[in-house]
Length: 184
Image (cartoon, rainbow, N blue to C red; front, side, top):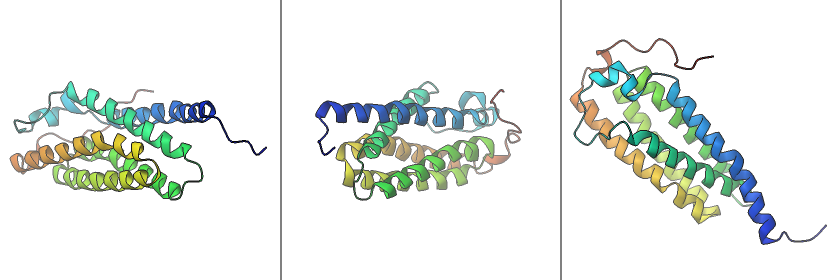
């Protein structure tokens, strides 16, 4: 068959990708957030001095759900762009930044490494920028969908830096979490 797909067929192909990528990215984010006590569930985090600009607890699930939905849609756009030049590298960058993103919760909340988590946030930001640039070469809309992620991680890095300044010995406030919160 040498027929070109109709717009409707192309749209359905993208939707099929999105039906996989959006829930997958959301699930990975949920798993990462449940590996160790985080936010108000963490006695260690509650004991830290926090800067005035620290978002309230209710902001985190709203922000991360939005970020993960946008990221999943962006990934679906790139996966849908079969044959696009640079597609494999763009997908690889996305996977690497997602792994780094998932590791941050454990580094900060699990290991209580304030400075290490700050360094990791900077790495995540650089990886998301690189991912957006790679996505932008394939689909500009996919790059724009990563903008909320870049803004949130930039803001988080500023807050993280301030937490590090306010808590020079913050890692020793409460013992590290011994186990995951995931119940089997």
